[in-house]
Length: 305
Image (cartoon, rainbow, N blue to C red):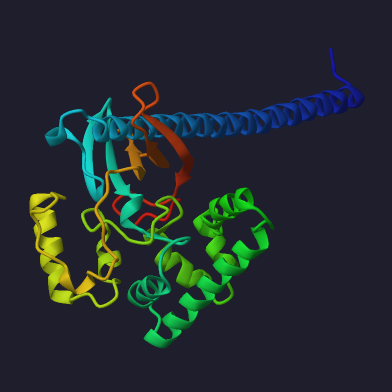
């Protein structure tokens, strides 16, 4: 039986349609396959990130337990050194920095601020002094704006508010003249949590000690070398006689920043920054003042407050 030309055309068209449908299905399959691989990678990244975050958060808990250890010889120091521990299948790098070793924006003398702006901020002595005065003027203006009028009760409220001219260290950017570059340089060494005008030399970062007014550079380096070797032991480190003008005072640890870098076995990293306040109350030995994700590793200087 012979096939007519019309039937041949119909069969050709049907075959062409089949080919087009198969091609379309192939494109859809490739697209679905790509989407599935992308979603799998996203899910894997989320899983790895969650694992790194859990490891970092565990590091904060370990740090708190370390500083609260009842045995003094076993307590973890809060002088900024990095401690590395293994946890689950990953590792944690933990750094604890006493806020009392930093320069308090609300309480430090302009001379101390000027020293930091010059040493760590990269400013000349004249520019550092002018900017320190601008910071002090901002504090005074803020305090006067917040101060209520009349009565001893009002005076007590004013004193309490004076300590909060800078609520967070980021408020420093509100001061005219504090450029982003300057802020980034000094942020790791300032705080709003100590509430005192002096600093603790046993836990202060090297940049802070080098910023002390009238300090002897040689004494600072000898002090830092001894502290690195012996640890922050009161009464057993070389003196800092050049900075004895009321800038130094050792106190019991009250507030500290914990930087905890969690790293999974596959190399995913997450860094948690937490400001922890310690208490003598055994039912509530600590509280969290700040809790955030930090982009930098704990081996670097800390700018979280």
